[in-house]
Image 1 (tube, protein in one colour):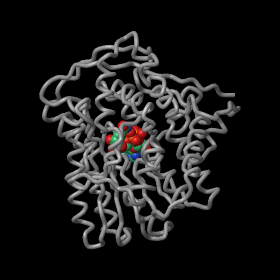
Image 2 (tube, protein in one colour):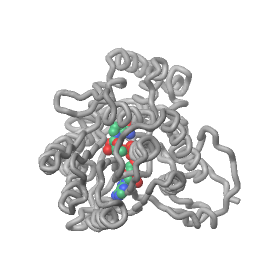
Image 3 (cartoon, rainbow, N blue to C red):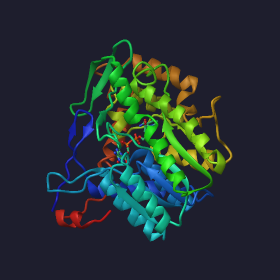
Length: 398
Ligand code: NAI
């Protein structure tokens, strides 16, 4: 029998509980179902579908709107008792099993989304086995590296400031410590490489390939999750390398809008709220912002996990009657985070934090840690310990 151990290095989760991942997917499905069904898209492609925002989107559209889905992700399966693979691997499997119980198509492509081959394989699948067209394409990829599809060159993204170094408080969840971190400014090459990896080029390449192959419906929508943040994180996010990458997505959205004009399609940047994900846990200083922000938002009743936020985005905003757009047409579900009283209280709280109190009742450290643990299948609500063998895990098919 396998034992599952939560293994954290810095703020990176290494261990996984496959059965906990399954329970977490079930919990998200229950959340969506408890809100009932809604009229939404029916044939959806999600690029970056196996965790956090992408997974929540897939769950929401399948179990809320009855959509068939194709999910593209990059995950690893179990090798041996010490290397059980990644959480997203098990999320994909749990999602497919549950969707198929409701007669929904749930096709997983576990391969590099940046490559031309993956795009062509997905297109062939849409043509031959998915009814020929998709009416929504969700781009929710987060990656530290991108292999250029033409040259094979590997680009790495850097999470860095631009111009001046940034000095501020950070936390380490491995040893539950609070310390001062210095984030160096990026050079021009690092900025360009981060835009290459996390900017909108690949999104545009996907949309061009899909359009050219005639697999997009009239009126197709494509969404891409962005983050703008506030003055509390501007120095290292909006004003840093990641901010440049997000600005590139805004530009590419305009290109895609032109590309889709003749089929009345639309590219929608969705400025999503700060949530606990694999990606956000490793952004320097960001967890400190989150433990302050979540505390304030919990007290106001506005704190959301990805599934809650995504449910509001698709059910109420995009396919509902309560969208909020900004002056350049981006959807702004992040308005709860940006609320001026929320931000003022968060600032006041963060300024009081130190090594003694950062993990006390003053903050939402416990919430952040639990949400972080949930991503790898630990501390999951309703989880009941069960026995499973390595061979049983290896036999699971995505
Ligand atoms: P995540 O790390 O939880 O998920 C990323 C997904 O991309 C996974 O499904 C992973 O398998 C997939 N992926 C990575 N490299 C791939 C590759 N080469 N080929 C195929 N799939 C690949 O990320 P998260 O945090 O959900 O981020 C998704 C988007 O949401 C990002 O654009 C992020 O900037 C944005 N966002 C995140 C916020 C946050 O607070 N975490 C806030 C607002 C926006």
